[in-house]
Amino acid sequence: MLSTREAYGLALAEFGSQYDFYVLDADLAKATQTIKFKEKYPERFLDMGIAESNMMNFAAGMSACGTPVFASTFAAFAAGRAYDQIRNGIAYPNCNVKIGATHGGVLIGADGGSHQCIEDISLMRTIPNMTVLSPCDTEETFACVRAALEWEGPVYLRFGRLGTPDIYEKGALKFEIGKGQVVLDGGDAAIIAVGDMVFKSLEAAGRLRAAGIHAAVIDMASIKPIDADLVCTYARKAGCVVTAEDHNVMGGLGGAVAEVLAGACPTPMEFVGVKDQFGRSGAPQELAMLYGLTVEAIEEAVKKAVGRKR
Image (cartoon, rainbow, N blue to C red; front, side, top):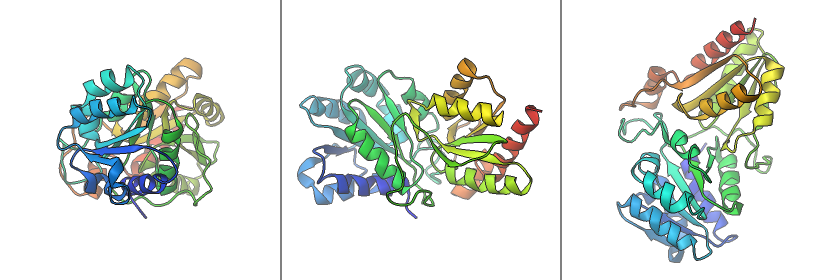
């Protein structure tokens, strides 16, 4: 059981022999796990120091020479400190830069509110030309990194800090940007989740089945572009939708799904996520309880959503 940030480092190291690309980091190579690529391909790795904004512009310039570039740091520093450089230096000219943002959400634990980024998905998905991906396990992380390498243009990849149980068997996932994955079928409710919350959604669905509620679980790792057809298919099939994410309930996955539903198939919906609060220091399990990022919270949200459709 690896964290998605660990899987990110492994993916970079593995794909280094298959693709031509560079990796930049902002003095956090051990934490972001880009050190794995550095150890294997030191000639294609640059540590830019604690200068995230400069790193983004440097990555944009390097990519203009024809080679994809990964720029890695914590989500709080990538989406926050370097927002202007990402918007104007990378996305506006549509540069082939992949932003590897680790330590997203409050479940990273003791780093506290300054480092627990709960607004990065919202910030990144509203930038034109930007693609946003958030994998849930090791296999999907590898798939997302490969997809980003083969995608022409900027990509924001969001990774977590904690170990995540494997959902997909090696080689069994057919990932495609713009498509979601139905990991569990059901017709009473549709749970759409990303990152750490996908496995928790599966656990919640198991409990709900014991209560006679058959909920589908959809892994929406491609947040932008989102799989609108799949969202609407399950909204119509199930009659209600719940989103689950380690992110602010405003503007993230929940916002993206709500936009689809409002425009194409209005459906009762509930949101599981951080309720517009800053994070704080604590053990991940304590923070999950505090911010409502638990199996029980998903279960209750589904029951509430089901009750609204009757």
